[in-house]
Amino acid sequence: MFIIKYKKIFISISLGLVVLSLISIFSFGLNAGIDFKGGAITEVVYTLGRPKQADLLVNLESLNLGNILLQPTEEKGYIIKSRDLSESEHIALLEALSSDGQSAQGAGSRELAEISFNSIGPSAGSELARKAIVAVCLVALAIILFIAFSFRRVSRPISSWKYGLIAVGTLLHDVIIPTGIFAALSYYYGAEMDSLFVVAILTILGLSVSDTIVIFDRIRENLKIEGNANKIDFGEIVGRSLEQSFTRSVATSMTVILVLLALVFFGPTTTRYFAILLATGMIVGTYSSIFLASPLLVFWEEWQRKS
Image 1 (cartoon, rainbow, N blue to C red):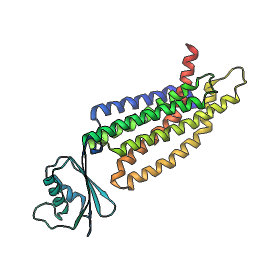
Image 2 (image 1 turned 180 degrees about the vertical axis):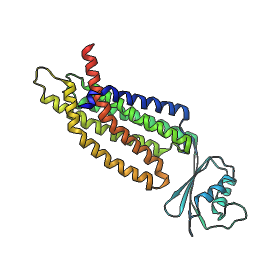
Image 3 (image 1 turned 120 degrees about the vertical axis):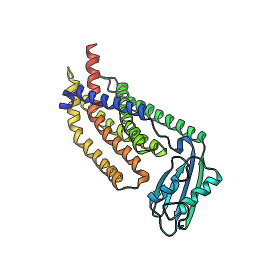
Image 4 (image 1 turned 90 degrees about the vertical axis):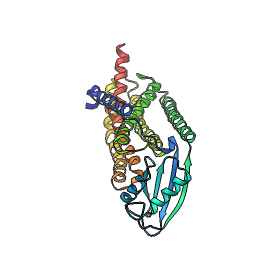
C-alpha cells in the first residue's frame, strides 16, 4: 500500500506538526481558566429577557475587574468567570449585569436573579491540575499494559510491548497537536484551559487509541494467518491490514467529526473551544492511526532487522 511505501513522508509530516505545535505551546502558553488558577463563577438569569452580550461586556469593562469571561447559558442566563471578588466588587458586578444600557450608570435595569456565586481557590486549581496529569499518565500506562497483554502471542517480528509503546507515542502526537492549536486560540481569542479541556484530552486519548487498536488487531490476525510461512514480509502484511481497515476507520471517524463540526459552528459558545479541541483531536487521531502508527511499526521492524 502507498502508505507503507511512502512511510517516511507521513512520519515526517507528523514530526513537523508536533514541532510546530510545541513551538506554539511554548511561545503562546496556555491561558489557564479559573478551574486551575482560582477565581469566581457567577451564574445569573434574566426573568424578562437576556440583554445583548456586547452591551454587558461594555458595562463589565467599566468595572476594571481584569479579564472577565461572559458565557450565555440556556435561554435567559449568563455565566461570568472572573478573578476572585470582594463583597463590594460582587455587588458592583450584579449592578452592571442588571443594567439595560451601554453604561452601568444612569441606565434602565432588568430583573436579574443570581443563581449561584462560587469562589475557587488557587489550591483547588493546583489539585485539579495534578489530578489531570495523573489521569493522563495512568491512561497511557493502562494502554501499554492492555496492548502488551492482548498482543502477547504475537512476538514475531515485533515484540508485543512495542505495539503498546508505538500506540502511546501516537497518542502523544494526537494530544500535542490539538494542544498547540488551543495555545494559538488562547493567545489570539482568549480561549481558557478549564475542566472541559481535560475532558477533551482524555476523550481524544480514548477515541484515538481505539482506532489504532483496531488496525493493530487486523495486523495481528494477518500475522497469525501468515505464521506458518517460512518468510514473513512484515511491510506487506501491514499494508494489507491497512487496506482492509482504511475505509472502516475513515468512515467511523468522519461520522464523529461531522457531529463535532456541527457543534463548533451551531453549538453554544460555552462549548465551542471544547468542540474545536475534540474535532481537531479526532482528525489528528484518524491520521495517526492510519498514517503514523502502522508505518512506525514497519520502520521499527526494518531498523531492527538491519541492526
